[in-house]
Every structure is written in C-alpha cells, then in structure tokens.
Image: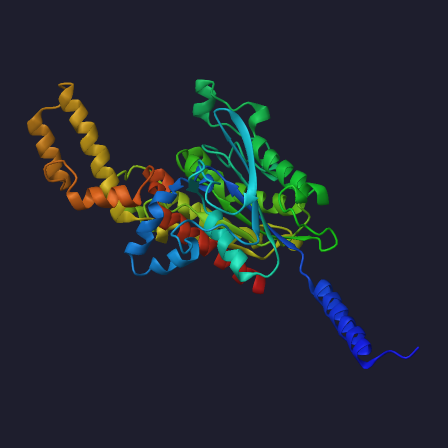
Length: 395
C-alpha cells in the first residue's frame, strides 16, 4: 500500500518529535542535591515581615524582584524542594515541600535555604533538592563532633563541676544529620516523598554542602581551641560517609557584629574575632591536613558583610536602656545614674527616636546573635552562598 504524502509527512514529523524527546531524555541532568546543616542561624530567624525593608536600600532593592511575586507575596520556587529536620521543645520535626517561606524557626520565617534555593533553582535547568538539618544551641566540639575528631576531652572546669557531656551525646547530631541525609536518599520512593516527579533513571547528584554554625563553640574557649581541627575532620568525615571525596563544601563564617567585631561599641567581651580566625583557618589548612582523595573544593563564605550594624546599634539601645529602666523601677538605679549612662552611650533621653523605632519595626524580628532576624541579612547571605556554590561547580 502506498501512503499518501500527508501520511508520510505525519510519520516523519512524529519520528522527528520522538527523536527530539529521546535526545532531551538522554541529556536530562540528575536531580541536584544540596545539604545545609548547622545550628540556630541555619534554622533561621528572619520573619517575612522584614522583607519589604530590603527595598529601602538601593543596593539590595533588586532582590525584591527575586523573592516577591507581582502581588508582593514571597515567591515559591518552581523546581526546588526542601526536606528539613529540626528540633525544639516538643522533639524533632520533619518538614518538606517546595522552597518557600516557612523552613525557619516557624511558618513565617526563613533561614539561608530560602534565597539559596531560589538562586540555585533560577540558575539550573534540572530539579533541586535541599536537605536541611539544624538544631539550635549546638556545638561542633560536642553535639556535631565528627568521628575523626576522636572522643571529647573535657576541660578541667567541666571535670571540676561534674558537667562533662554524656558519652552518647557526643556526636549525636552529627549522626542524626548523616542518618537523615541517607534516609532521604535511600531509594526512589524516599526521594519522591519530597520531590514528587523524581525520575529514578535520571538519578541524583550530591552537588554541595553548606555548614553554618559557631555561636556555641565561640562562647566556650575550650571549644575555640579545637574548632579548626574539628572542622577539618567534619568535612572529611562527611565526604567519606556520603562517598563523595571532593563534595563542594562551604563553611559559613560567623558574622555577628560584622567583619570587624572588635570595633563594636557593645558586647565586646565575646571572642568573636578570635573564633572567626579558627573558621578561616580550617579552610586554609584543610588541603594540607587531609589525605589526597579529599583535597580541594572547600571555601569560606563570610556572613559578616551582611550583618546590619546600624540595626544592631538600635538593638543595644533598646536592650540597655530597657534594663536600666527596670532597675530604676526596682530602686536599684537612680534616675540621675540612668541619665548619666544614657549620655555616656549617646542614647539621648533613653527613648528610641521615631526614625529608630520605624527602622526597628521594619527590619528586625529577633536578637543580635540571630542576625537580628533580618530578612535583608538572610536573603543576601543565602544568595551569596548559592552564588559561591555555583561558582565552585564551574571548576
């Protein structure tokens, strides 16, 4: 039987379409998997109500087009998903879904994952999965202690006080982190619980790890002295257990009080600068201290440039004057002494000015050790982490 020219053309067209689909399938990239881990600042304290303030600064204003839709609501990612293991007073919680507001301290807050996920999603054609594990108030020396660091050696003060960490708690959150990552990636079914359209034939690629933690180690000088070594062991152990020896790895540097904490007027007793040096040192020394298969692809990304120093000044004015007022009410401080303290610190009459109050209400939603709960800080830092990760992947 002789086919008509129209029929032949139709078959040819279908053949071309089929070939094109085969090419697309062959070129489909695997699901990109990124792991984000740490303590409370990886959890994230920035309330979505602070997003609008990003537009107040001409330098950051363009970011609003990336995180807000045409109605002014926070965007939901197109092709990036997150699964999030965290803990609180009621025990551990697991959340998952598309990257959006709500994977921070509560359903209206974000951590670095929000802008990180949106930025990665925009840059890549393939789907993205973020596995996030974060618990507040945890140290690398004890809670996240990696196996390679060996048993925890308590300080003399801990021995004298009898407050030596229990053996089973040493490394507990490291093990929970690894367990959750491996459980999420166990098989196609476990991945589809988070990424509904996951194609097992397409597979997945462990594409990067971001670590953002440090406050609890910074507050303990015994921990500061071992942080660089512990961090180096942590990176190598994670790469070994996940079987990706050169997994791109970012150490997020503690940036509370900016890049020069010693220049701050307030809370100068904390060894923030000393601790930051140990984090940078871990990255600088990593390749010299690990076996050949694990070298390379480790960088530091400083959160200090994104800390809002002027907002911090308002925080400390509120905090200090509030404490003094309570002391005056209790008769523990005279009104004259209150006025002297205000004058010494440049606090005027001890009340926030109208402009300071507007700035505080618009920009802040938490304390200084949580980066003031500033959306501007968390969005810019999350984006910086994503850009650094994408740059590493080009190499």
